[in-house]
Length: 465
Image (cartoon, rainbow, N blue to C red; front, side, top):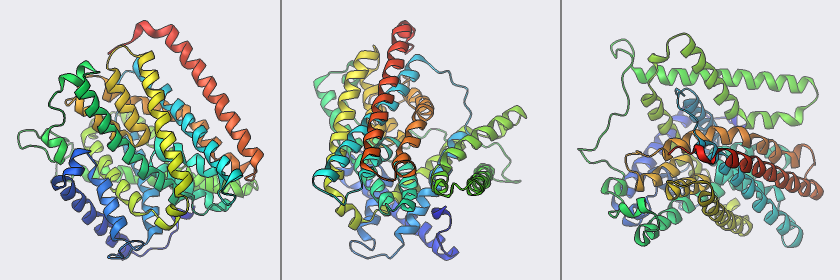
């Protein structure tokens, strides 16, 4: 429960909000005017975070703020974004392609976990005896699952003596973002020039001006949300934010109840893990609340556009805070093994996706490849951003499939979240425990592969594009 109880005054919180707001504006200006950032489509929120890192207490010390508080904001914003996703309506059909992308995501999580843990364990045994091998398990958390999850679960490991895990997880996520956008854009540019993809080649103009600068042209400004309440009574945004707050309150009550049960059973060591999974509880409760609202016939009072805008806003602040919260002193200490893990993890992700998209799909192969590559090294927003290059209006089913497949990946990937904590909760950090974890992950990857093979064999003729 550590991230829930970090001391901060109301003034601290609002000043931090003001700081993050200024950083996001600065990031937007940098994206608009710096050619390098426009070239590689670096998100404004990511630029904001790096600006915060530079002006923060560990580099130029222009602004003083608490890295611990920034980490706490990441922790809470993670759950809030999962709530926003859970409160959106879900009436879309699960297609053949969605299930395949779900299998891909879970497989990549396991591959990244195997690469990261093998490298970290080998380094700890051969070169760096002080390195905690669990560092390798932060690779799938930071790459495939994003900075919020990497920090939330990594931070819970401080209860087991790995104090730096949260910051290391954020560092891996930051590197993952760079892989997603920099190498992702390089792959797209190469494909556009070579014409390897018919659809990519047809987009000979490449990136539009709006995509480069991050600012839409005056004639290209679609409706983002619709008003479901009369503003004279209450602002519609107020209701959507209030509902997110309600669900978060229920999340706190639920997690606190689970904690009390564990303490009563003498399982105090499991409590940090419970609070690190608060985003899972938040998402499930949000899904339940949305279901109750729909059953009550009040679903029309919520607008998906408004909820998406709200969720996107929370995600922007989350990313900015996650980079700002990185401790460079800790990052430098772990730089060697982390850089090797990240490079090989990105390489393994690239080759697995190149192979699997060619084997599984007959249409939109490049779009699915680049979307998945960016998502599994960055976030789903990274994947959607790069898909827009070849499909600017999202006319193909690829963008929607990417979103829907994430739910399936979360369900099949949940055992991996349990597994990731086992070196501490079950094996007390022993070397043999890490070897067992590697064996279990390899076995689970094999099971997922066999299930996927059977699904493809039985359903290839059902592909819908």
